[in-house]
Every structure is written in C-alpha cells, then in structure tokens.
Amino acid sequence: MTTSPLVETVLRWYDENARDLPWRRPEASPWSVLVSEFMLQQTPVVRVLPVHEAWLTRWPTPADLAAEASGEAVRAWGRLGYPRRALRLHAAAVAITEQHGGEVPSSYDELLALPGVGDYTAAAIAAFAYGQRQVVLDTNVRRVLARAVTGTEFPPRSVTRAERALGAELLPSDPPTAATWSVAVMELGALVCTADRPRCADCPVAGLCAWRQAGSPAYDGPPRPVQTYAGTDRQCRGRLLAVLRDAPGPVAEERLDLAWDIDEQRERCLASLVADGLAAVDADGRYRLP
DNA sequence: CAATCGTGGAG
DNA sequence: TCTCCAAGATT
Image (cartoon, rainbow, N blue to C red; front, top):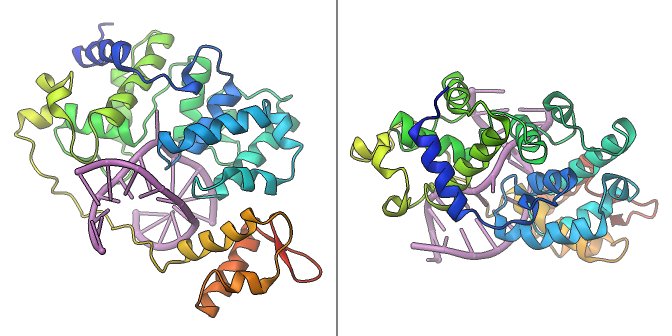
C-alpha cells in the first residue's frame, strides 16, 4: 500500500515542527497520556501543561488518584473548566484500579467503557499510549481533512460516515506510522490549519489543499450556534464551585450567596452541582467539595 | 440530534 | 469591548 503525498508531507512536517509536550515523551506512561487527554477535552494545551504536571506528581498512578476523595480531583482540576471531567477522571482511575489491575487498558473497547472516555479519547489513548493503528478524529484532524481533501473550510457538525471512511483510507498500514500520522495531522491543525486565521503561507500541504485550490471559499454550511456565557448557569456554577474549591473546608450558604446575585438561579445551580456530584451538603447545611 | 457543561487567551 | 473557540462526552 502506498502512502499518500498528504500523509508523507505531514509526517515530514511533524518531524521538524512537533511541540515537545510531556505526554508525548518516550518515557510518558499511558496514565500520563490518559490524564492529558481528559484535560485537553476543550481546554488549550498551554493551560493544561502546569495542571498535568501537578497531577502526575501528586498521583503518579491511577491507584494513587483512586485512593483520594473525588473532591480532591475537583480541587486539583483548578480552573481548567468543565469540572465534571475531573470527576470522570477520578471515576476512570477507580475503574482502572478495580477492574484493570491498576493498568490503563490498551484496547479501544475497554477504554471506551471508562467514564469520560468517548470515541475520540479511546482512539487517542490507544494510538498515543500504545502505538496502535486507530482512526483518531478530533476537531483538528477533521478540519485539516475537510480543507485539504474535501475542500470545505469546516467539517460537518458531527462526525460523518464519510469522514470515518476518509480517516481509515488515509491511515498508514504500519501501526507506529499510523499513530505518528494521527498526532501529526492533529498538530498541523492545532498550529497551522487553525479554525481562525489559518496560516496557509506556512502550511506544508498548501500546494495540495483542495480548499485552497478552490479559492478558499467561505463556509456556507449551517451557522454554528454562538457560545454565550455571561449570565448563564455555566457561569453561575463556575462561580459557586470556585468558592468551594478555594475554601479549605465546608462553606456556609451565606458565603455562596455573595458569589451570585440572582437567588433563583443560584439555588438551582447549587442544587445541580450537588446532583452532579461536584458539591456535597453537610448535616449542618454547609457546602463542600465531595 | 441538540443542548448542556467552564475558562481564559488572542485578535 | 466583543467575538471566537480550544485534543469532547453525556443525556
């Protein structure tokens, strides 16, 4: 089987331009890779770096994290956002400890069964921690393929059959090379073929990019919903959880009242945090991390 | 399938 | 200032 010019070019580019990230080093453990994948779900690399280092120092193995209260995971998550990921990472550590002898599983199906692990993360861990041949489709890869191959500025809203087929078709047959291709095309999307202001002048595959050859036509698909934040429950929950995270122990409800003005919304959000397992109520009515 | 779920840096 | 959006998962 012949590797396509796209794949070969991206592999060469990656060899010269890959960032040196802790979870990519040869000595990085599967656990380090798994932790990074959880943290990188919707959070930029630069913000993940210091937290990832702190986690791996404090909890070098899944069993170390599993032995802690889940609230410690939430606290150590800091301001990475979407703190339910911290809860799921803790739950994944428990599952790994109890069901996999403390070793991060290597099969896609076993990974997929872990809390907080979806299709992307399962494929990414199998590929990056274990060197397997997997179709890894994240937002970066999908955007690169949409542009370079399909000729559209952005991929569809959700992963399509056609995208899976394309990913499978491009995937090199040799597992180690396939794994490198997966991280390489992801890196190209993160550094060059960006969503906003792509750096086509510096792109190694600009010459064979279908989107460029078509004249870089503007995106004409359905408009993506704008992400509002100010005034939302997400912001309210973030404020409330920040109070709990920054307090050494239980917090009286009056202190949470200061974090958000609208009574009804604050109470609803507080209840949802408890329902999600991100907060707990003591017998005396004070709130704390679980 | 669409809504929900945080946070902060860049332009 | 304001818009965009970053290695998604879950319901």
